[in-house]
Structures are given as C-alpha cells and as structure tokens.
Figure 1 (spheres, one colour):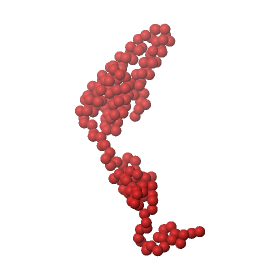
Figure 2 (cartoon, rainbow, N blue to C red):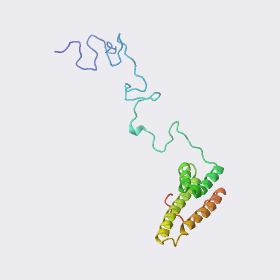
Figure 3 (cartoon, rainbow, N blue to C red):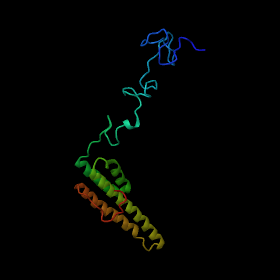
Figure 4 (cartoon, helix red, strand yellow):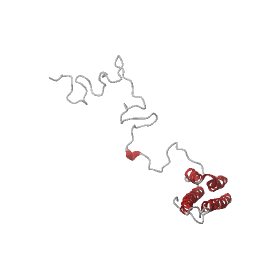
Length: 190
C-alpha cells in the first residue's frame, strides 16, 4: 500500500507542497538534532562529482582532463640552468673522480645533470662509459694474470696507468670546457 503523500516520481515534491520549495529536512549521515545537516567539507567524498581536494573545483577529473605529459605543472619546481663554471667543475670531477672511485663519479654527474646541461650529460656519459670499460679491462687483466700463472702480472698495472693518464687528460679538457672523447671506450650510455 502506498502513501498518498508519497509521489510516484522521486524527483517530484510530495503532494500538498508547491514545486520549487524544499521539503522537510531528511535525516542524513551527518544530521544533527533539529534537522541541521553539515555541509560537505573540502577533501571529502560528499561533494557532487566525487572526491574534491581543498581549493580544487569540480572534484575528480576524468583521465582526459589531465595536462599532457611534459607540460609544466602548476607549482612545479623548475631547475635552473647550470653555469659554465659549474659545468667545468662537474665535468672535471666526473673525469678525475673516476681515478679514485671508478664509474660512480661519472654516474653521479650524468644522473644529476643530464636534464640540466647537455655538456654535462655528454661528459658524464663519456666518463661513465670509460670507467665501465676500465672495470671490464681490469677484470680481464686479472683473469689473464691468473691463467698465465703470473707471467702477465703487469696487465692490471697497465690498466691502472691507462685509467690515470686518460682521466687526467679528460679532466684537463673539461676544465677548458672542451668536449673530450676517450680514444677507446665501450659506449653503453648515450
């Protein structure tokens, strides 16, 4: 049995109430005594359209509404370009640091500055590739020394001298802000 005051269409006001006037307060999940209902707070799911963060109109955005990849994001941190003096310093450290800590120096320069300086990207990759080549040569020299029962004992020393000589040459070229290419290196990183 239906109530005569309940409309057949839920969008229609109950009978006896003029259209356009709000009906009596309905109890809701946030109802207070006396029929008062709290308005939805920003940052809640109660907003029409889904979750809405404070200060963001419209709630959840559809996937097509996001800015395209590579577009500057509002409030995004923009990195400053690298000065020529810093390029000289970090280029030199990438090459000379390879003498002391191996490929880690070139890797650090490459990863930190690849998006900020084309020069440091190239020199960091060059230093990294040369140091990877030196590691491979040192392993091969050690294996050859062991296999030859010590006859080729000088090979690891030769690899170490080559690393120092070419590291210094590259560091000096970087200090003059020149692009240096090692005469031999396995170029894995571009």
